[in-house]
Image (cartoon, rainbow, N blue to C red; front, side):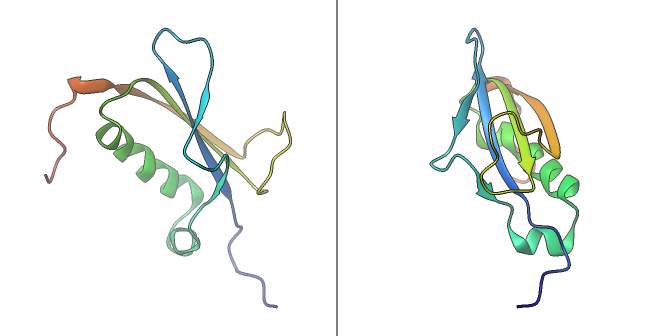
Length: 101
């Protein structure tokens, strides 16, 4: 079987609500694969940036911090450092209307 020319990655989103001490995994799966089509067209960082730019509008009912972590393996062991990690603030209902809506 021919290997893809891109490196597959897996990701997870974690959320920490204002006033809460810990992070909680968002979504039905603890870790999901980054779409292959996205990695064919762009780097992991570009895909992650686009995902996080939409997050405040898609998750406008949440107030707190959102953390995206990306890994090279589908089931990272506890303590495995992510290859990419970025945190953004979710301000809740205080956002202006989404551009293009």
